[in-house]
Length: 445
Image (cartoon, rainbow, N blue to C red; front, side, top):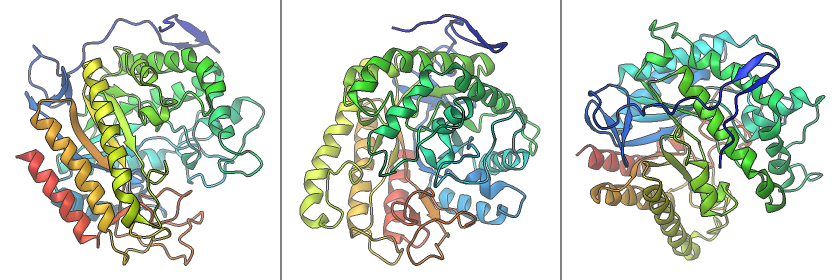
């Protein structure tokens, strides 16, 4: 399935075809502080490793010692999450200075080889503070979507500045993901990303003095947030060999730089794989991919009606159950662990973004996800953890329309292209936090 040629572009070797790495923590190896894989399960310190996690993409921005940073708030948010029993955070380790609408600024990098050291030090600080609380991190190194610059930005840097914006009426769905899929055939764009991956993976933490590659605080490197082979079958199907090749080669490249950490895709699962099980399997089949991921978004996928939750919740819940069961079955087939690393649900109402609005159905949805994790764990299955989307904490939007404005410093789990408060969990959401805390305690027990 995979083309494992060694390819040289622009004088930079794109590593491929290296020997299959030993997966850290596999059976027969000595106990390690690094999270590893033993069959269907994660292990750490010689014991099974399961976790209740959260998405806190903005950690590096808060951790930066700059006008846009807020290290005191970062510490408070981590303390709140630790008190809930959250053990793992999924954070972003890349963002590109981009012409795309709604992309976050500042970024970790522009087109050149000079990277934003202030923001990288913010990532250092975040990892150092997580280590104090015995949390682990999943760090994603690219984004299929526009809100952090992403693959469309890389393409614009090598194609003369051509790009389209997501949700542009002049370029209706699925034109954006179809155009983005050209990344998997653009060796110049991939080379730019590889250069950045190398800089991050081989970085030494300026706070702790520990090389990232030697830091057990990092659980896994992730290739990208929600990589897809395309948006339409007409583009995605012929692009599948390129998509699989990019996953395999990039994962092997990271393994060649860092032999301690796990690597995974960041895939949504079936919804990011043109609804085909064979695509999910082949995207995670590379021996350099250590575990499988899936994301669950009932509202985004029209599985329920946010304006009529009372009568549509149950139908959506049934689809969620089927979706989880399908991915558990696929993970068993692969023989790899599974993480539900994104799941989100709105508050009670179609345009309900204010933290004062109830979370009745959101709490039910969280309980469903957590019950599935607990049941599969009890059965010895591959479902080893989850990361809710996302932690808003003490942030509140100052804008009546709940829209993000460039320059806003009250970072939330809801990224800049989304209404601020749509899916995130606020520090005042007592009932939701109680659900999270109960699940974390159940897994710990």
